Amino acid sequence: MGLKRPRWWWRFRWLSWLYAYLFHYFWLPCPICGRQFGGHEWLPDHALMLSLHKGIAVCPNCGDEAKRRNSIVLKKLGVLIVPPSAPTEGGV
Image 1 (cartoon, rainbow, N blue to C red):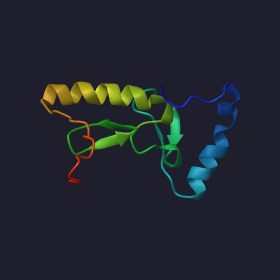
Image 2 (image 1 turned 30 degrees about the horizontal axis):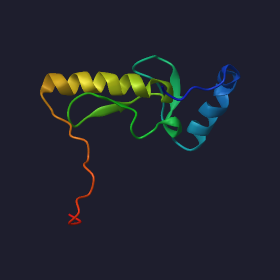
Image 3 (image 1 turned 30 degrees about the vertical axis):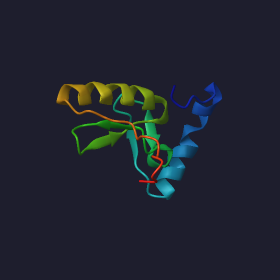
Image 4 (image 1 turned 180 degrees about the vertical axis):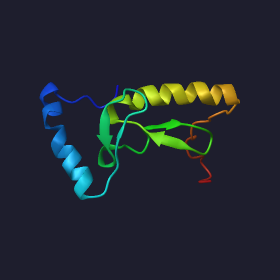
């Protein structure tokens, strides 16, 4: 699941907007849910792939959905993602 915040948190979104404005972060709608969020809230692994080399940030709540959609795109492109293996005994 993505980052879930308490219901009262959304009453104070203007503080988050102010922070983004003062420190020059972006403030854009999430491409998945449409909720406004700031660049300071973005998490590195939460991005929706546009191509193999381009992506767009999504809000913290939509990170899991972005990962699901990315896996579908990668399968269509025929890209095989191999998880990193455990280190071998030789150290390399």
